[in-house]
Amino acid sequence: MKDSTTFNQIVNSYEQLWRSNHAHELDLGGKSYLDQLYASILKSDDFFKIMNNNSCIIDLGAGMGSKIVRELSACSPQIIAVDCFPSFVDLPLRYNAKKIISNILETDLPDNCADLVVSAYVATHNPYFVSDENQKKYADEIIRLLKPGGIFWGEEKDLNQHIFKYNKLIEEYTYLYPFYVHFFKKI
Image (tube, rainbow, N blue to C red; front, side, top):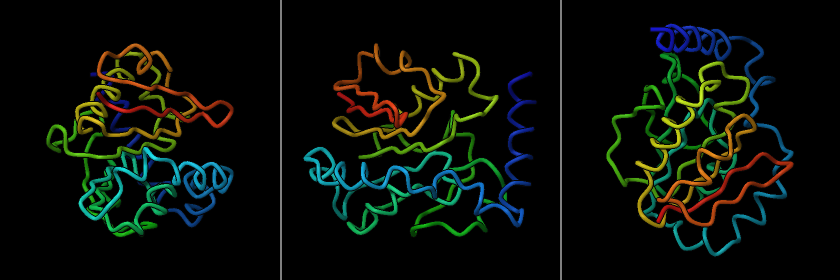
């Protein structure tokens, strides 16, 4: 019951945030501090191999959309943007995408459907992710959504590394400090 109350409070606060006149100022995904990192990562073999017009990218907790997804949208992948608040359907994104309103801990998307799952600033200062249980649920959902060989890119300061680091379905887990980026491939 406590989790559903917290979740409902978060949904309500997101509604207020994204409908405010200051939404663009508060859009963490719009900041440019990772632009150089994006430029080098997007040239990597891991990203190059999976990005094409048959690829599927899921942007969890999309808000206005992750900048890295915007950069990858040039490859014409299918993009699914997921967030929890009702007015998300009216929010302009940085890229074209199918929008889904859902709790990101348990989406209705099929297993093994994504070549890339992106999470940017979903857990940052979010009381829903204080509990290890919800962090584990989030990690499990990300892994469930990824195809074998799929990649996770998470710009998440407040996600514990251990939720990914010791998972047997993950290879090549990397945490890029001081950027707070989690990166791995699903086996």
